Structure formats: C-alpha cells, structure tokens
Amino acid sequence: MCGFCNDPEHNGFGRRDFLKLAGLFTAAGAFPLLSQLQQAQAAQPDAPLRIGYLPITDAAPLLVAHHQGLFADLGLQVEKPRMFRSWAQLVEAFLSGSVNLVHVLAPMAIWSRYGSGAATRVVAWNHINGSSLTVAAGQGIDRIEDLGGKTLAIPFWYSIHNVVLQLVLRKHGLEPVTQGTPNPKQVLLSVMAPSDMLPGLAAGSIAGYIVAEPFNAAAELNGLGKVLRFTGDVWKDHACCVVQMHEADLEQRPEWSQKVVSALVQAQAWMRDHREDTVNILAKDNPASYTPHSRETLAQVLLGELANSPSGLIQHPDWQQQRIDFKPYPFASYTEQLVELLKQTEVKGSTRFLQKLDPAQVARDLVDDRFVRQAIADVGGMGVFGLPDSFQREEIIQP
Image (cartoon, rainbow, N blue to C red; front, side, top):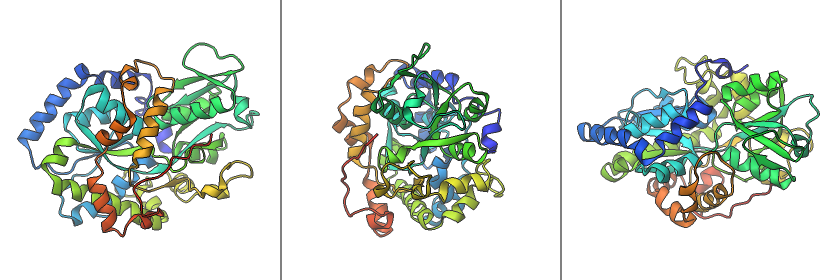
C-alpha cells in the first residue's frame, strides 16, 4: 500500500484544509501573507529558488528537475524542495514568500488570483491527465449509472477532479449534490483527504473517489478498487496541476524566471523518455526521499498506457493517452474552457468571484507564457512533446 495513504499527518486535505484555504483566498485573509511576501522580497530580492510541493505524482517535474541538477546547471541557487502536508500549508507558504515555485490545482490558481487578489501567475503546465475515478471492487459498480444514491469523495471543490466528475455524472443522468442523503438519481460529493480515501473505500463509507495518482494505482494494487474512468479519457490532454510563480519575480527577475521555467521544461522532456528512471527518482527508497510511494505504485502510473486497460474501459482509444504525461505549454483554450465549466460546477462556498470572470481575459491575465515558449523552443519545439507546432488547440471533452 502507498505510504502516503497511511500517513496520519496527511489529514489536512479535507474539510479543515478547505476552510483554511477559503480564508486565504479572500482579500482580507490573504492580506497578512501578502504583506509578509512584500517584506521578504524587499529583504531578499535575489532569493534562491525555493520549491514547495505535495508528495504526489503531480509534483514530478519539479522534483526531477531538482534531482537531475537542471536548476543548478542553469546557474540557479536552489534549496532542497520542501514537502508540505496539505494544500493550505503549501498555499500559505507560497503567498507569504517562504517558497517561490509551486504546483497547484489549475482551478485553485484561478481561485487564488481572483478570490484573494494575489499577484501570482501560471507559467506552465506541470503535467496532463494523471487522475481517475476509482470505485470499490466487487460491489457491483460497473457503470456510471450504478453510482446513483451513493457517495463519492473528491480531493477539493476547486479541482479538475470535481469539474470532470460532474460532467460525467450529468452525462449519465445523475445529479451531483453537496449535502443531504442522495436519492437514486443523485450522487453525494464529499471533500476527503486523499490519505483517507483508500481506507474509506475499504470500510464502505464511500463508493469511490476521483483523485490524482498514485491513489488510484494503490487501490488497484491492493485489490480494493478499480478504475471506472480515466479523466484523460474524458477531457483530452487536460492539465491538472500547473506551475505557479510570483508576478514580482517574473517582472523583476526575468532572466532568473526564464531559467526556472527552462529547467522544468527540460525535466518534462527528459521524463517522457526516461519513465523508469523517473519512477526510481520518486520512489520512497531513493535517498532524496521526495515521496513515500513504492516503486510498484509509481510504475503503475508512470509506465501505464491507457491502451493496455481492461476491455471496454477506454472510450476514446484513438486519443492514444498515457496514464500521466508531460506537455508544459498552457493552452489558452483550456483556461477559457475551465473558467466556463467552473461556473457550472457545484461547489461549497461563495462563487460570486467566478461569475464575474471573463474566460478570455482570465487566459490572458492568469497565464504568462513568455518563458515557457522560449523554453520549449530551446529543447527543440512542440514536437518534442508530441504536439503540432502551434500554441493553439481545440478542447475535446467527451464525458
């Protein structure tokens, strides 16, 4: 079983974490942290690279870039990456300036900038796909329709997981609800710590969960769950976590920022051709101790191709998806589509800030793609990542 799933310290992904983030992502809640950030930047304008991450596969490019010395090779002074136990801890450290490079859920990046007014920007995608809807094994859940009247866990209201899950449920005639007892045509959604999801599945308190890897792989390997849908088979090549940096660094230290992004792009290019090496780097027995996951669990994710899934599981084999992949360019069409879908997604808490957002404006304002464009060109262009030579694409969503 994955060590992360058994770690009692990982209890901050749930309700308490959401409530804390809800406070951080308001102007009043963020103000003290943003004041600390300004003081830190004034006191140390040439601060070294300080990476913050959660120990999930979403963080792989940041960790691989550090392990392989890619930041150092470009002349950057970089500290050992700091592992955080919850999104709230990670965001708090980032907003206050304790770390200056993080990966966050794409919807969370939107909430951060427009909910609290934090001067943060998305500079690249950290990975694509890498999440699944996993249900209890041996419980007669073989179709989406079988989830009616049941409870599913999500890692966060502002997550691609919640967005995709609700698209799938509605496609199959089910209504997602956030409270109460679901009727046979409803599915109750509950925010749960990923560390609690596997035990919850085993205990029967939830019928399934949708979350980033390697929690889905852990359920498969332990015989407790099975994948019902891969999110990459719903929204083709969707981003999950994005790379976030402070706007002040991007504007005041452009050469430094370019080196940071270049190292991350180099890492993603390297990982596509060195997946087994990536498993070894991230595994718990690596001396760097980046994550608590076993090689077997990580291999299930990083070496997995959806084409090898059980018959009938993949609805779009022509998409030729891998379980997780790495394509760093942050397409504007994705951000625009995500804003539109977030407005239609059931979440707890106020969404007034969402309703005011213009999708095209968010894509221009939230994302700074100057550095990633140069970095991609330096490694050989979009073709290195299996993409056509274009910075535009059409979003394909087929739930």
